[in-house]
Amino acid sequence: PLENQQPTLIQDLPRGRVEKAIQIPNYRYDAEYQQEGVTCAACHVRDGKILGPYDDSAAPHPTQFDPSFRTTQVCYRCHNVVSGPMQFYNAGPCGTYPEYEGKFFMKEKGLICQSCHMPEVERPVAKGSPIRYGRRHLWRGGHDPDMVKRAVAVQVQADPPTPQPGDDVKLTLTLINAGAGHKIPTGDPDRFFTVEFTVRDSNGTVVHEQSDTMGRWILWQPVIVEVYDNRLLPLASRDYAFEYEMPENEKGWIVQARIRYHIQTDGQNQMLRDQYGLTADDPYVFTIYEREFPLDATLPVVVQNQEPDLRVGCMAPSDGLTPHHPSNTSSLHS
Image (cartoon, rainbow, N blue to C red; front, side, top):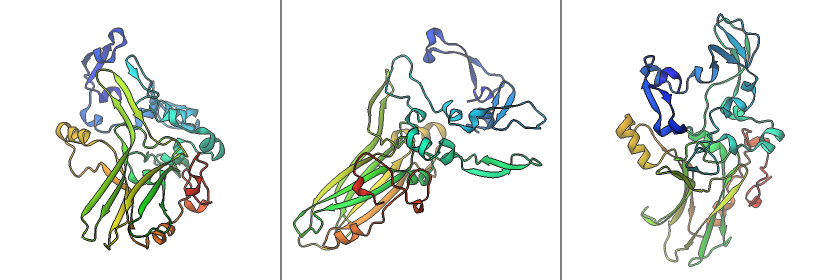
């Protein structure tokens, strides 16, 4: 937060320990300003000057050209969380920047962070100023389910290809990080995916369920320790298998394949409700993929009729680009 967004100021850090910080009241604290969160000045103000990507400003206040606004370095300032004493993990808990895959996305496709999260626009920066190239300040990302959907490609295969009643049917869901230049999910380690398979009978009754989790688990006390991280690297894929016996004398049974994106855990959501007034109107679980497959002889037809997903980066599917991920290339079509 900015200085006047904080109710207290840190006066001293004994032995460099954040948890032992000596704080004093901040007489410039502005509670309303605090509610703005990451606001204009967080990126654009340094030492009393307004920074930006142009050096020809005629504004009636001090300005300064900063070339980092045209590169990923402007994002690096906040999205590269480094470790400290008594912290054990491979990358910072919200460190999206170190995950960035620059060889394909930046060097081959010319994409930087802003390409996806701050789309290009031509408009005046202020009233009366000239129309020129800039970027929208939307920062759509981990809190926007549509952006998450753009990062994920899914294909499902069945084995055997022509199952008969009584056969064990294996469905393989391949989840591909086809559109993000960083791991998915990224940012706050409370975020995670669940890959779910649910069998329902003809009445809609749940007969069997299976769920797998993709994310990052960090223990915060008494020291910060990364327990595991099974998130997908850029352009990588992972198979999730589900097996079930084809019903012999039943009709109308289906298996539902679903991927859900959780912005936070149930425990974190409850804490935010109790302490910060979050309400049920603030969703935190989103379905990013859902498909039903019949457990009968029509299963192969439904599987074959899936449309191939060719998304890469921010490009539209019509660009016909196929990601070069290291495994399961048969699940994509060029």
